[in-house]
Length: 140
Image 1 (cartoon, rainbow, N blue to C red):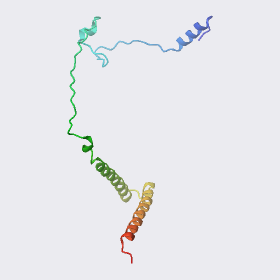
Image 2 (image 1 turned 120 degrees about the vertical axis):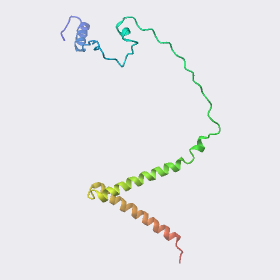
Image 3 (image 1 turned 180 degrees about the horizontal axis):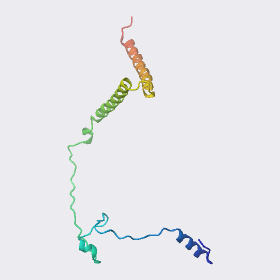
Image 4 (image 1 turned 180 degrees about the vertical axis):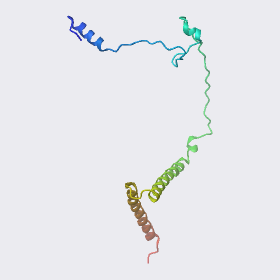
């Protein structure tokens, strides 16, 4: 960038020297552009633009929803499906980890964490069952 007598000329010269050059390349023969549609091969070579296509009008019909179908009634049992899907996910996850630890690398960190967690949760379930048995057993 060289200094010119005027500040704005210097600025313009510096900015224009840093701009990239743009070249227009004509497409190779036989290649079809996916960006432009051509009416025919003759239309591609002529300088006369093709006539615009007539705009087609589309008819849209709306209808009122059925009154007999209530959305609350349709999704009434969706909570049960959600619960079953959650339980299935837990069973598959725990079962898959148990199978991996049984037949795979039992000394891995995943398996040691899994065994510690299972010991904790099974202990909690056993304590809960003991509490239920205590409340349901006849007092002497």
